[in-house]
Amino acid sequence: MFKSISTTLAVAAISVGAFAQAASANNWGQITLANDSPYFMNYTVMSDGWNCNDAPLRGVSISADPNAEVALKILRKDGHGCNGEQGVFLLQMPMPTYKAVPLPISYTSDGCLVDPHDRAAQLGYQLNYIVEMEGSCPNFRLRITPAVQ
Image (cartoon, rainbow, N blue to C red; front, side):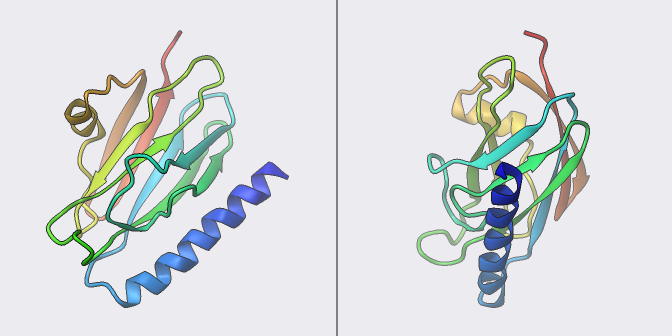
């Protein structure tokens, strides 16, 4: 049941984002989240740290089975004080064996992702899991591996 609720929220966010795309000069991007662990993972877009996004929306949650991947669409908002700014949000990823620091995401209107390690350093976060970034604008893959605790 939990998995179907997450899927419904993700589909709703993509549908809302599709409306925003029609009115936006920005390009869609995609972040593929690769769950490099033996655990079921749930990724949630937090309300804190969220700004200048048409997609994803606050509270959107997607889930990945062990050693599987899920996709998250991104689209930066135009206007409303966001022109010239990057889309930013935090992904909460409860690790089954320890409390993980939220993963900071920042991207441009072209869907170019800022390296999460650089964004974490800007925010004063020390990531307590391994993140490997692959890809190029506007499609990226983040392989997330829990650290040994």
